[in-house]
Amino acid sequence: PKRNELRQVLFLRLTQLLRYQTVELSLVSFYSPSDEDGYLNPQGSYKITDSLSIALGANFFLGRKDSTPFGQLDKNDNLYIRLRYSF
Image (cartoon, rainbow, N blue to C red; front, side, top):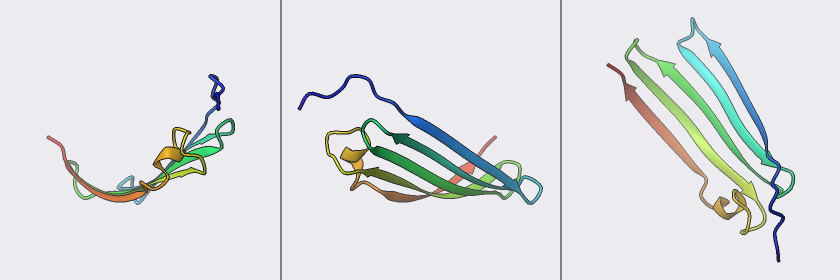
């Protein structure tokens, strides 16, 4: 079927800093009412030192149709861990 070329997407980002800004909790989300699909990215990170941090997060793709941008990735949900050293 022919798809509408216009796509509406709602975006939301929530961030909370805790423990003297060494802990960060965040949620990034997209939702498309026109395609009825979306994406969620919750993440928690801990700043071990000024130059070393660790994070744990996930990517969740939502959608029933394989023809939509996020729906085609519905089976690709994943968890990740990140260790970052900055200099």
